Amino acid sequence: MLQIIEKLLSEVENFKAENKEQVEEFRLKYLSKKGELSKIFDEFRMVPNEQKKEIGQKINFLKQTAQAKFEALQKNTASTENDSLGNIDITLPGNPVELGSHHPISIVRNEIIDIFSRIGFTVEEGPEVEDDWHVFSALNFPPEHPARDMQDTFFIEKNPDILLRTHTSSVQTRVMEHTQPPIRSIFPGRVFRNEAISARAHCIFHQVEGLYVDTNVSFADLKQTLLYFAKEMFGNHTQIRLRPSYFPFTEPSAEMDISCSICGGKGCSVCKGTGWLEILGCGMVDPNVLTNCNIDASKYTGFAFGMGVERIAMLKYQVKDIRLFFKNDTRFLKQFEAAK
Image (tube, rainbow, N blue to C red; front, side, top):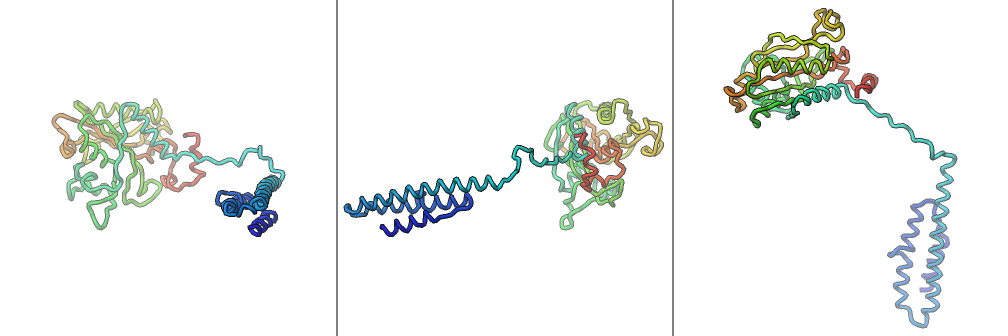
């Protein structure tokens, strides 16, 4: 055992460490519960009584030497690391982290949601990959109906009954199937249409649709709701007009225009000299749609509307190319930091 102690003493005295990891290695090897010193003390119990005094003194000396060595190594590596900092002023602030800005589509979407939330509309969402029933059939689009040609659809090749939704009206269908009136909700989400990408159109865009179903809901309620929205979004001076139109799921149907915020209704290049800008479609929910969704059309009536978020954002911020919303060009996006 004396030879083992002498060997360990030599190792301890000659051990060198250049960093904290090596100091920890020293501690684990010699001073830990499973270290060499612990093993020596366990074996000490087997030493004959006549040798205990001599070997005990050697073990204690080894222990004191190892402990002193450990403390010296700790001190030396700490001072070395401090020296490596050189003349760095640690009180200086760190490098600034540049924060991103909200996307204009998110800004406008959240503003639309906030406006309708103030008058009692809840927010509902649904799947982007849908079936034919919820996107078309339940909404008065029977098979081979020419109205299906109004929207160029991405169908799943292996199952033509599955498609990427072309409008968030599919969420209206789902809500009406599982909820009895009164229903007052908006449906924001991403939609897909097989269209050529240009400055005015994209194959991916965002919609916010709305639905109100209850007893005695009238077209006057629809008009007042949309007038409130237009004034909140574009300013209290904004006027609206409703033009007759056609949608399979509403009757009567209308397109809504707002007075041009650029020229004040006098006529400019943005409104093509008319003084008006089209922003959404709307109408009274067709009784067939209510019946398809298990709602009593003899008792309840309702209105629905839908708008493109990109369209609203383009008008609000005077953006002339819809593709800018999808390019993630930081020079474009940084312009909306103040709008957060």
